[in-house]
Image (cartoon, rainbow, N blue to C red):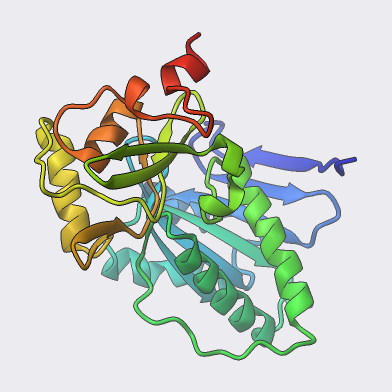
Length: 276
């Protein structure tokens, strides 16, 4: 039986997309969600100058993380002043701050290194950290770091941000496939969003009929999210789309009806699985 969890949320501006603080029952850690334009206002909150780690994120049009940066702070929100001057990409900060007794300096450094490694492993978004800290996590600290990270992952999920590798959270029976001209694509559909999965082959020999999708493919090729391996092009991150057809065009090029192109393990089309 799943364990119930209680969260207390304060909307400091009285707006659902304004400054929020979140605290899990009995936890010593508080989460602060700070839209970048409200950074100065957030400094007025009590408890906002405690130590912890934070994520700077840039959201795409679907309110999903497109870019992310992970850092540590010993003086809470004040650390964001440097990023406000030097980093342009982010539009929201999510801070996980705890009292000094909970987060020692070693704990903060270990948690930061652990969170960065998890962000890189997820391959869901572009990670802006240019250096993965070489900090060695003490074996006695690791269980606590993992426990805190699980709470961070849970809180992020309540805000619509998934932190795990897409494949790790997908049952193979739910995975969709498309194979055409020797190109094998993998995906998953939740009824609203289609996600092309890491490891999918991409047919770069056929240009998309959609200029937007074609530009997205070329950008992914330039930034290394699509890599050439022999005579094949492989997607090394998972990419979300608003429709199965957009996802199909991204993988196969040309003009695609994703409802008949994507098929389940038993050979049924997506149309048969979801519409009939």
